[in-house]
Picture: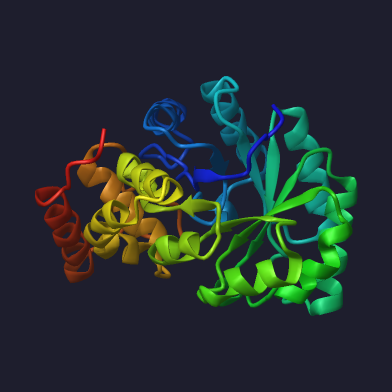
Length: 301
């Protein structure tokens, strides 16, 4: 599949586990299908929310195969490349392309905090080897490596790099990137509770987290904003905000999987070192989700 329009809602889907913590293929098939039927525009597998760091290489390819099979070319499927070395990243991208990935969301090399020169070299190497288009995932808050607007200007000659997942937690970056690079890149917001702000400033898409439990609301917000129906979008976004804040947490995986469980589309199973929430921490998330369900807005047709 050629990704014709890099825009819309791309869920960073959760990876489903059985009680013995092996991959739950049936649960992922069901969940990925529900996301697509709810109107999302693409799927991103094995990201941070997909518990990339606790998946073996073969498991990442298995999750990708499930998504590709379920999508049946209805929406593009991106594989996350978040390996420890540039060489490992290139190898996984090549294997993932053979398994049907339509593109890649690429992080800096994990564990080592690279400087500007090293970061640019990493992305150039993967871009030049990549058989598919790339979304650069910029998240200096979580990973310590910042791909700045002028660095994106320097990388603009790499044709394989077509999109940016902007997660610096600074909505001003959208304007700065556009001022630096014009319309060279498709910008996606990667922070749930900054999504509307980012889209109003020129982001085309939303790499979303709470979409895993609330896909129709997420899709509605994006479509209303793109259609210029700002007040309608704002009404839903304000209702959604307490839920969206759950994405901005070190425990976003546990938070969102608990929300999925309450909504009835998943379980709380996570792989160690993560553990499911307990006690007051868990009760607070349950209260937020139940309050949202009790006040769920009517969506436009």
